Length: 255
Image (cartoon, rainbow, N blue to C red; front, side):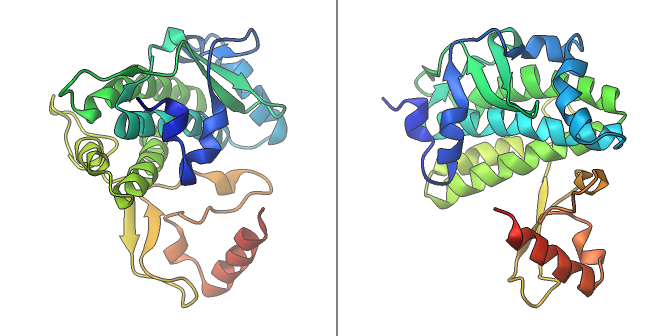
């Protein structure tokens, strides 16, 4: 049977060392972040790094760091290993790094096998319902930001991981994407805030090949001092060519 770390290979290998079994005292319990009890503490590093920046931009970037810890292991474990991770908030810890952003996901264990015949998408239901929904609601209120922006960040990463796994020939990844990202409505009739999180558009710059992958909504990173739009920003097609070339130089200079 595959282990979770076996599933995080290739493009997903950087996520392998970011998820561990067991808990440490310095980790912030996810349940305490969802309740709001320790959210300000969790966000303190981001606030110190970007003093005076809009709260909505700060929380938007912080929660993307959380998504990078949670989403790739859950999706890869389910699709490649048929593993379900323990996703009750009380069983999840986020260990911060030197800059305050979470860098390690702590879990009770690294997955148990799905039941025979259980759809892979079912392993992702706890992620969306028990983790993402309550966390996004709390963070959106704290940062006075539309929950749709934060859901789009989650969907953007989900689409990236599932598209990578689909291209690698894993049919269950495409089935998972069809359940999570393609329906406009949820089974209960409410809006699916993960619906079509990215668009693939014709290139708007000669040096960029088509198609261009863009988020549906901007994550507001450009509102932080010293930061610029990311390479998937939906605002890019409306920018003048001179600014686009300057952004290209900036992106290529990043490590």
